[in-house]
Length: 217
Image 1 (cartoon, rainbow, N blue to C red):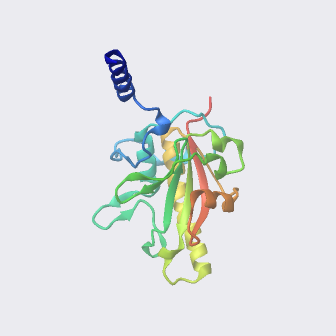
Image 2: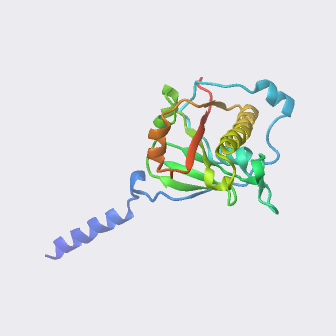
Image 3: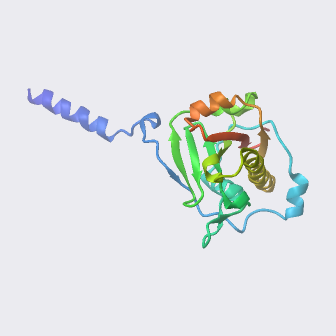
């Protein structure tokens, strides 16, 4: 009996000390690092190299790159007012950036500069009809929350949410050109299927998606 109890205790200790597989680890928010203001190239060189790319490596983007990318896209550049690196109509700030990764879906919290967990599931394949979307490290999904647009007429909301998304997407293009990353924006996806997978509310609308990664060599 003593040997059996000792064996049981040994087994329990081994199970306790062995790290759990990644799949069982808690799906939680990801703090981002402070944006690097001393990185990047001259603007005219970046504009010269700005382009759409449709071939991506599956190499993971480091947290530093993701942090700089999202801050460039629509991060807070004036903490005293909470205003962003992009303009928005009436300062609605109605566009949310969702980040689809192999580990799951997150949404960018610009005010706190961190990624908040949304869905513990890889939905990259739903972000577009192209084959590369499921293998590239991240797919950005730009979602407009129409409740933030107040009492503006529907056609005004449609116009300005599209314009505001364009500002964000272009910032992503410029950051990618500066850092040697590949990116492409697109409007072709099954919005109903993607919105259902993301568990969006009726007042949230998918405007655009954009893939980001290292160029395929």
